[in-house]
Length: 323
Image 1 (tube, rainbow, N blue to C red):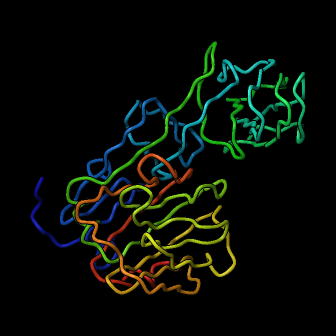
Image 2 (image 1 turned 90 degrees about the horizontal axis):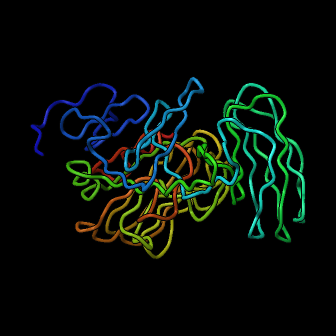
Image 3 (image 1 turned 60 degrees about the horizontal axis):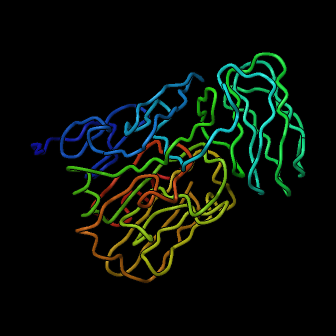
């Protein structure tokens, strides 16, 4: 696809070669486009994503999960709670030790998890919430648990993991939602390969795990912009990182605006108007690499919403766009 180069509209960040605004459903890459026309998604199952008003949208397999909250990219999870959209008290067999999360959505009701034949810690009750009430517990010996429902929650979920993900609707058996694998295509891919600057906006990241990816080339990863701790973002060139504290003391859980710079001499990073970090080392040649948003080749999912992804040809040009 080819587009004539036109003057960018006012909402596009100054000098951007590609700007994908998922929240407002608009994109620019030398011409106007929709964000969904500049990305491809692989996900071998349906999935849900929340809207700003608290409602939920359902997306077919391989459809990017974009709402007015952004693009949602999550790892694969399995809901062990049956008939999750009409929840009733039930006993669940857990076949592995480790962390599990109970999630309850809605405006009323609650769920209480207790040990049956399983043993563990952290059991208790959690009330429904529009964005999801969460309780994480640990299983030290496998067996059964009982989840007791009070009132009328909208959805209930029990999943292996130290944090909760979006609702997975079940019937009479457990259901697995596949991982989101989102890539840039067409003129957005060209812009990313030629870029020396990137600016990303994220929100609702529940926890730091496995270097949550914002933007990445290749897998391994070859190079990326990602979360590198509970309060840090970084620009990684395949060897080392320019790692910056978010707002000098912040966390990844809220709105994060991160800017990265990269060329043949160094990589840079700063987030939420914090201190800029620099590592002296070259950004690799990415001219033949796949560009990913919110993952790195099928792993390292963001596990949250990517609101916006912007690319530019001048290193450091988005440094003042993180306040």
